[in-house]
Every structure is written in structure tokens, then in C-alpha cells.
Image (cartoon, rainbow, N blue to C red; front, side, top):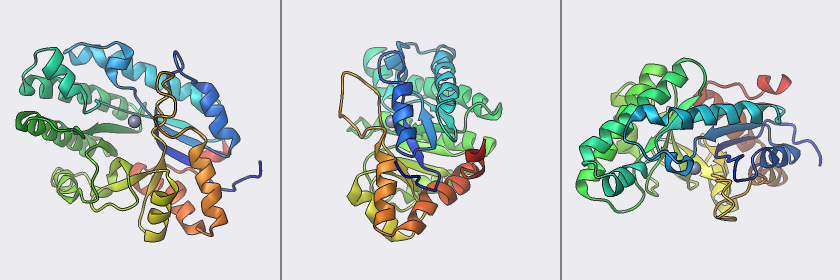
Length: 282
Ligand SMILES: [Zn+2]
């Protein structure tokens, strides 16, 4: 495999070394030319946490930071954890744990407070929040927006990026404005699972050829991701760990060299303050 001569960052994926492929997936990514990963914690319920007490979510973050440290040993660059509460948690709390939307909001905001501790201590790179991508009641929608606004306050306070899981959209300027109002620049709000076009936050584009080409042609800042879930029960549910390096190779063949630099050097620096080039020479 020829060298890609560039950092290659997958901006959003999950690893489950217990049940899934774990480090084998990291090695596959690296073999194809991948260098850096942003590792997002698995949904808490997948790790067996069914509590309404935010303190009980700490092991989810501990596990994720441990996996990121191990993944770093298998990469020419490194992996960083991104920690937070999956927006689908609100439905589990309301529908299965008899929480009111306000109680669920308080729990999730508390979980984010703990995630922010990891960011302040330099153990995590950013926060993860958002709102359901499926239909919910007005009360749950409001509560979800309040959770997300709290994440923006924490992001502003820690000077860190906030990755969002939201409904499919090409215009989230209202959400980006909520971040700006709280002191978090819109560029530090990242929409995970984005298409090739997005107004407001920085898009983390799912690495389908069409979407990546749209983003590459736009000349705008963007990131690339797979949302690999490493779940043996759902093979092929999302893109595999080889996809980002493969798409970078394809972008190079198509002559999109500037877009490669945008997605793997410049945007990561502007959004997260990370230097993917110097961390390659570890
Ligand atoms: Zn994900």
C-alpha cells in the first residue's frame, strides 16, 4: 500500500473491544493509511448503564479513554476520546425509567458535566450531545434542546468542540446561533453524520463518495467520518474502518488535494486545536 503522504482522520467512530473487532479495526484503518481517530463513547445502555444518576456514567467515560489510549498504540498518529450523552438516552429515561422530560434533562446535563471534567483534565478532546433524529413529544424536544444548550455552555467554558447527533438537515444555523450566544464559536459545533452541505456547524461528512465529493467541491471546512459502531450484531450497519483512508486515496486520484488538506489538517486544527501533522512524528 503506497503512502498517502497526509494525516488521515476519522472524526467519529466507536470501538467495542469486548464484543466487536476493537484493535483489529484500528490496525486495519492504519494499514490503509489512517493516522488519527476521534473515538466517541458508546451509548451508555450498550455498556449496561441503566441509571438515572450521572455518577453511574463515569465507567462509560473511563472505558472510552482506556480504549483511546490503547488505540493510540496502534496508530502512527493518535486517538482522542470525545465524551457525552447520546441524545437517544432521553427516550430511554422517559419511556423506560419513568423520568419526566425535566428529570431526564437534569440527568443528561449531569452526565455532560462529568464529561466536561475529562475535557478540563485533558483526558478528552471534546463533548458529544444533540437531539433525537426521530419524532418525539414537544416536551422531550424542548428538554433535548436544553441538554444541547448546556453542552454549548460547557464547550464555551472548556474551549472545546461539541459534536452533535441531530435530525438530518442542511441548515442548522439556529442551533449554531445557540452555541454562539453561549460563547462557543459555530465552527466548534460539529454535526456528526452530515451530508456534503451544511449551513451553521462544521459538517462531519459520512464518507459516501457523493457526499465527500460535494463537500470537497464546496471549498468549505469539513471533516470525514464513518460512524463505525463495531457491533457484531449489526455488521454493515455503517461504514467500515477502512473507508476514510480509501476515500482519501480516491480524492487524491480525482485531484482534490486541497480538500484532503482541509478535512485532515486545517479543519481539525480550527475545530479542535489539534495538530495532525506534528502528532504524526511521535
Ligand atoms: Zn456514532
